[in-house]
Amino acid sequence: MNNETNAPTERNIAAAPTEMGRHEAVTSQSWADLSANLWGGRDLLANKDLAESDANKDGSGGESANDAAAQKNSKSNTAEAYLPPMDLSELKNEALHDFDRLDSGHAGFLSKEQMAASIDNDPSIKGDDAIALAALYNIQRHERPSQVPPEVNLQAMTRTEVENLPTSLADEKLKLHELKTIEDPDLQSTFDPNNTGRISEASVGNVLGDKMASQYEALAEGYAAQHLTPAEQAQVRVSGLTQQEMNGLDKEQTFRVTEAKEETWLLNHAQASLGNKGSGAAFENTANPVASINQNDVTQGASGDCYFDSALAAVAKTQPEIIANSIKLNENGTYTVTFKGDPQHPIDVEPPTDSELSLYNSASADGTWANIIEKAYADHQILFGGRKIADDTEQDAISAGNAGRSLALLTGEPAPFYQLAPGQAARMESEPIGVISPLDQLEAAASQGAEAMVGIGNAPDGSGLASHHEYTVVGYQPGANGGNFELRNPWNDSTKYYGSYFSISADQLAPGINNIAFEANK
Image (cartoon, rainbow, N blue to C red; front, top):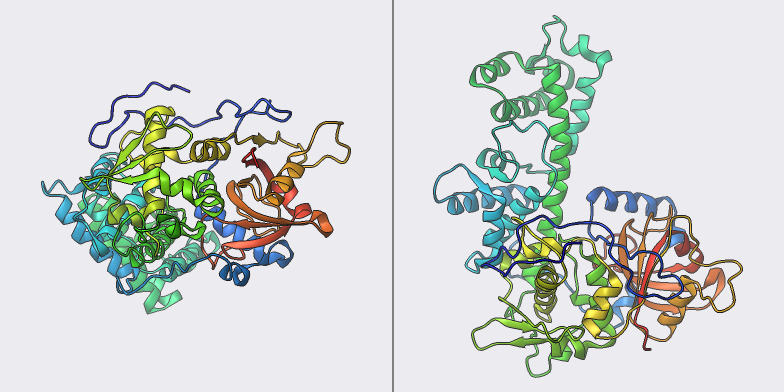
């Protein structure tokens, strides 16, 4: 990996996209000839949907531990009255308001870099406006429809696209389902009885009813406005879309369902975060910062940095004083974060904006320390870890990484990281003398109260685990089926995958293990 970096500008710390791949091994121990993996986080909604589907198939994989977790040192992350509820329709209206304010030159589009700079550097954007800006940027980060015309810059968001944002996830699913019906080749004679090559609003109404005809008209005109010439648009209004255009519309609607899911996720995440913002200080208990540090304050956002968040939550649980000592409030209102594993390179960061709190690690009733330290970690990795950004936020540069290296940076202690080779078992039936399998080492570390993390590759069916995701190991109890691990998901969402905390047997966990990491000196 190229470790050459440039001095930071106002926000554009480096000039190239993040290089993804495998890094050098963290240790030279028995399993460490395997290269250390770059590990992602809240990677894809499709991945989350698949994990939920698998969880619903078989409840044996993860006994819910939400009630037990509530009795621990956990604290609620439920939104307070700071923000009134907002739905996707209201989010769209706020997004249009943000667009017009930021597009001061009336160019008709917002660049990705422009949005990223506003997220990073504009604390005046607050509340619903901040959520809307975060939503626009989050949509921009994801795959766009393949039918966007060549003249449209994929690194920009046009006002037309904002006007066409979905306003209801349920409606988008309905439209997609019905459109697939329309596109069924066996039904073409039904929807195009005169063989005109087009599907009209009237024919849709005759088959599917007036409501679907009205929806089809809106979709067809929206598609035409974005992709067709004025003359072609007029023809669509009269005669409907061609089969080829319908195929393109189907793909676009597939995207719009994903888009609506992304908006829904961000809206829930942002409202919970800003609802708990409090004073906005790093530690709400300024007299005793350690009292403001809890593992449940760590809630992963849109960055794929589950590997870092799982390590951060582990340290918050076992050594909160490390976090308290690492963050210093300066007289000018900025923060200096000094990582114990690299005290020679302190990092200065601005207080988190509402847009950053909407998009990345949440605020909590305890403060904004998790967001501050996440941003400092991103800057540290850009300046000293070889990470690079182009027109993204700093936090986007740390998607995928190494949990062991993150833990060592936070604690200043050795943190072995073991990645299993393809087909390698987490525990061997007959282990060579002097060799301890990764799963046995994970059990030992968790039993001794050490910080420990486990990364999942392909999640076993019915396990309730998310694929390509890192978890904090918060406990282990010996017993049948290899004993039980208690895991914490950095998504910190009690409604997903058996909740924020859940128990899983070692035998069921083992097939999905890709990597483990833990503090060595415990």
